[in-house]
Length: 142
Image 1 (cartoon, rainbow, N blue to C red):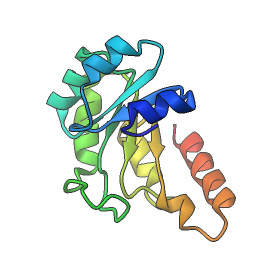
Image 2: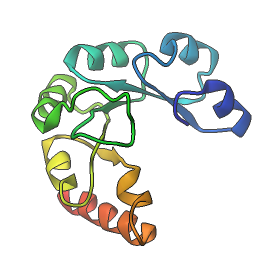
Image 3: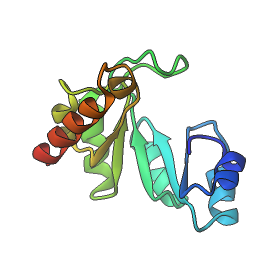
């Protein structure tokens, strides 16, 4: 569930993902220790802080420009992802932002363990096919 702890709780979600200004991850971790906690990060410092406060994974991005989120920051690119990977070691990273079948291999090769996508699936004429294609590329790229 993205950003909304009350909604996540009502739905019985397994986890919550917070952006840098979406709430207090320390308080959420303390009050909801059973939930998976993901935190969006854009650089090495934010990544280290997210890990320190108890995130289970970090979201890194946006990788590329995207129209899905109008308030997204400027893309950080795969070079920044690689620097973050080197900084956090094997800690789980999910890349986000402008990722689709033609660039997902590059994102995985740069250090992401997985990707979060919206428009590359929802904007496709055959969403199931698009999702399977992304999955196949990610699996092959690892």
